[in-house]
Length: 243
Image (tube, rainbow, N blue to C red; front, side, top):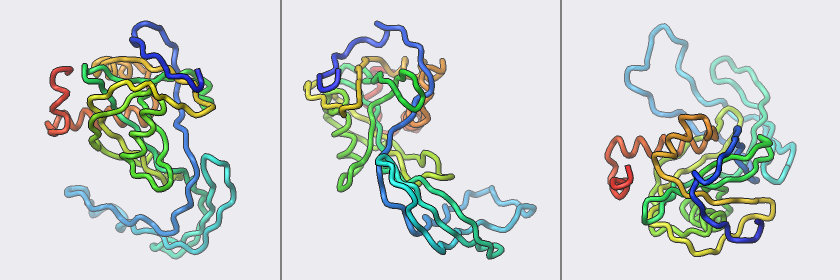
């Protein structure tokens, strides 16, 4: 299927046994300064807790490995609380994007592919990496067409998450793509073998509830969408006929 335009078929046309998918990455230079402290949340303070947390100062930093899809960075940081120094290893991957993409008829675009990390066939929403010089919106428009051959009429940001802030430095943005039309210009990477599946928003939820979809970033994208619907975000108004 590599190099060919995937033919969309109904998701229910095929029975799949799925396991945990793993998201792909890329390279990015490490960040040399901390992001800072997030805003406090009212009601969370507790006088019995330890003192407030502050960023650790950076003492030294070096790249110790470059593996094409990510770099490994080793840093030494100093605790603001007691002055001790500790070494940390960080994965620096490019930022990621994914999209809840629907056709003008309300069909949800899902993709099926084999994931080498999980050694399993998975179902996901379209997504990929933000290339150097791209905005997240530009990246997801490109990735959507490359993976599926579909082009969105509208793209709306739904939210973002940090995939694993314990040892990864990147961010994943989720978009809502509306009015997607099939142009037939799919251009998957040479190592990507993708089949496009047409589904629905209800089935998207059911696939997560059943454990068929367990990709953390896909589940997060679904949560972004449901939160936007719950707060009646005007960007989701067009979804009303398909809920």
